[in-house]
Image (cartoon, rainbow, N blue to C red; front, top):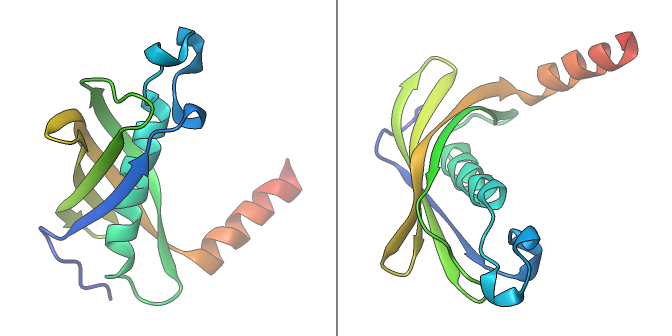
Length: 132
């Protein structure tokens, strides 16, 4: 089965553009990376981290997030996301996630993903669609 390395780290980088900001704040000067986009990139870093440990035909889906958004990252900032594997229990994998704008931590928390067999998962979802 999967040989998951506790302590393994995955990384993602994002240049903050107007498309990933909280646009309801008004003027461009007040626009910062939105919380949903920060969480998306934390999840991406986690998924990319775990993929290298999975057997062919397997992937993961997010099942839980517990995130704090600590500070803003303005348009033009480069945000680095780090996802560290902290536990693996059967199909569940837990991560410690962080987001950094330079030396300032702008987000932190935990994230959990479930390992899935892609073919079986797709078949179950197709069956649900037929029954809907």
